[in-house]
Length: 147
Image (cartoon, rainbow, N blue to C red; front, side):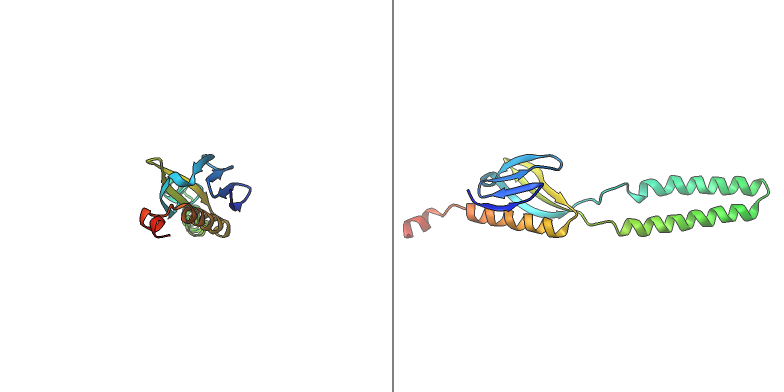
């Protein structure tokens, strides 16, 4: 058995793709993998579209309450601060690390083989899997007869 990649979370051999850590851990026979592809995954963390609307509503309610109580300047300060915080959240959201996934069909079931935000390690794993699949291909009957 030839080892193409060995890391703390994944091992790729000529026979198996083994996920040691991650979600979900598992063992996949190279020969049974089909339609392997690289796909962009969803970034980790909470999406801004879930957090921003309730925060904006809360800031506007607070600003309106303070404004109604006679502190117009404080109400405006709250609204401006909330808008600034929203812009900061948007910038942080845009700069989250990109997540990549290896997806495949394993025994007629779609699976996510591996996912990572570390581009270097992800590409090492994907190249190792590609080499394992290429070396696993059986020769055609015509090629065997010609040899």
